[in-house]
Length: 268
Image 1 (tube, rainbow, N blue to C red):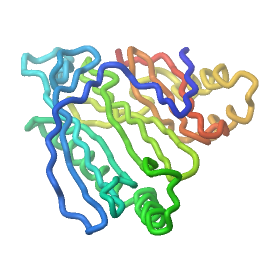
Image 2: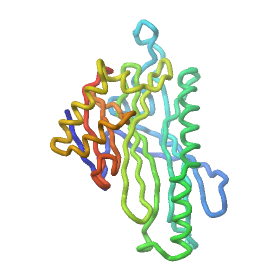
Image 3: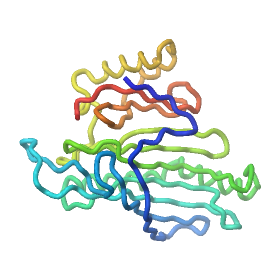
Image 4: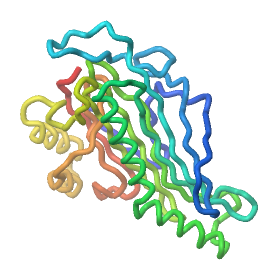
């Protein structure tokens, strides 16, 4: 079992290199500028320097077809709030994958993720960044000329094989006080388009195994373990045969630190 406790300097999974960007200006209120851009040349953890999935679609007998690898891009929707000098003081952004395929299953995933991005920008967190940024601009509340408020979610590939793909989502928040971090996964069966549950990737009694691993992780910290036991739906992503169980800032009563521990998966 691997254990991780994070802080402001997040642990970033190797293998995601972002290069050539394509920007398209979208209409927003005058106070903000918004963009949608694609990250090209995405390097996979176990694949070539392209944006092609190494996990080919499989048929019902679980034998890989000879069809081409599945291509995708990592899209980023973004809204910036600038002061009178044109300096970005507030940022809301959300990165998510989009498959380049006519497969009904992958189109289904694409539509779900587009809707997830739309809801992200309509959320209370997005509204708070906008309002807090505007207040701090109007009342000169920033600590210095470089301070910026943000709510951002970055996406990288953490697993890509056996007809399964897992995107590790890293979320960060700052609005003039503490810096909060959260992690979770978007995990899919590429053949059916199904979003994988924890029971799909851990054999047997998944909850029992998670609680056992969580207890070992917490050691004598019974407060943190109590929070784990109270969790009804676990956030997770996949990496090298393990299932990473994720808890964000404050969720285990560790302040702004974030926590992860692993359970052996059955998907690899």
